[in-house]
Image (cartoon, rainbow, N blue to C red; front, side, top):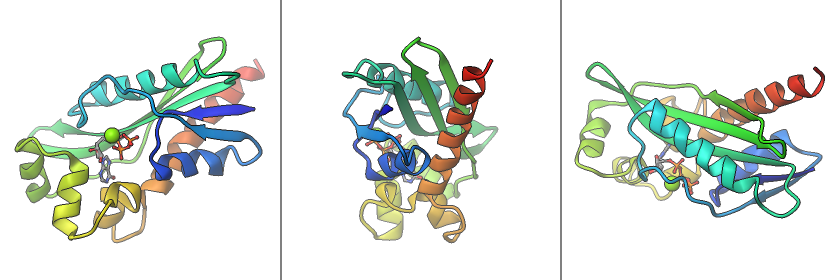
Length: 168
Ligand SMILES: O=P(O)(O)OP(=O)(O)OP(=O)(O)OC[C@H]1O[C@@H](n2cnc3c(O)ncnc32)[C@H](O)[C@@H]1O
Ligand SMILES: [Mg+2]
């Protein structure tokens, strides 16, 4: 199968490759059509669906996948949230979300100033490209769950639902 993933972020592409190890996985630059830093479940999910929708229009695509990172508020707290979408050639849509953790107040304050989480994380950790490596989730769980593992989980949830439907 030809599986297109709507991102050039190697963490996202490699996560899809891990789950679709027997297939051809191609990362493509598509637009999420939501803000660079989504601020709700709804917006993050919409970004994932938009990425999947555009990815499945690529040449000879069997599946299009979109993964989108964002944050969402519960009361005063800000949580990391991630959503995934998978669309097949018949335009069947499958969605799933990933693990979420509460972000420290310092990170919340950075985001409220209008910065992207990726930038805030790099400043906070004095590292480069946290978003392409362990991610905020990896930093704040002391490496127990890194961004790649979280995305792999989402991609498994998506593929599993799609495969289940194929047998019905
Ligand atoms: O190239 P793309 O596919 O856009 O990959 P990205 O890393 O920018 O990821 P998203 O657009 O899906 O995420 C939206 C924003 O949230 C940031 N982000 C999301 N999860 C993160 C994490 O675990 N660690 C660091 N930054 C994260 C990311 O850098 C963006 O600013
Ligand atoms: Mg982005």
